[in-house]
Amino acid sequence: MKGDIINLNNEYRQTARNIVEPLLSEIRKTNGVFNISVAGESGAGKSITAAAIAEQLENHDIKVRIFQQDDYFRLPPFSNDKTRRANLLWVGTGEVRLDLLDEHLKASKEGSKAIEKPLVIYPENRITTEVFDMNGIKVCIAEGTYSSLLKNIDKRIFIDRDRFDTMEDRHKRGRDLMDPFIEEVLEIEHEIINKHKVYADIIIDKTFNVHFL
Image (cartoon, rainbow, N blue to C red; front, side, top):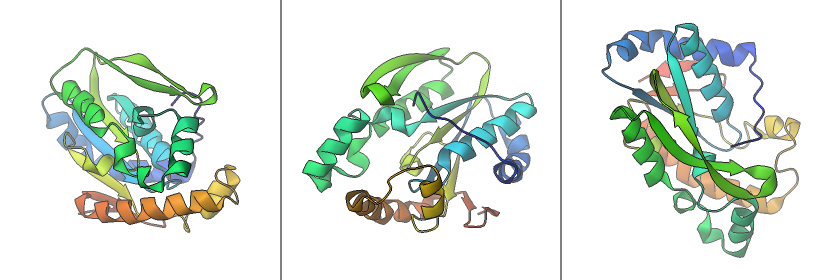
């Protein structure tokens, strides 16, 4: 999503190293593109974790593309919020074009040289498109709340932190402050996403320790 600002720190870099180093051999042995998902609740650190993993991979001369689930919402952000407020049943996997994201990840595995994908322009409340140049790409990272459900994934990472664990971080980022409706949305998402942990190959716990399953 255009406009996101990601600041990596040493904690996330170390977590990424603990994930990447055990995977290097498997990634290099894989024919074609190796796909990784990074899932978890809102504010859990999915985007920054994905960016840290990409940085570590690129340190090993492995080219990466990050696909953000936020770009695959059916409605632009302000419109999506309005629809949620009109009907809470809208909250969930149906908000997102997971099928299209899966199609793009499949295309990456099939050797597509370019992928035209959605791009959310948050301040303008609109969705446009951008083209990813896939030449030389070895790893794709799909990050987002529901990315554990994607089919074309080789390794699934789940960040096991809920909205209470991330409340301080959310407040520091100025996100969702003092909005009871947003808290209700996060509770619904929690009930959905918590069930996806069983799909994980790798879990990052509340203290950023990495567990391979």
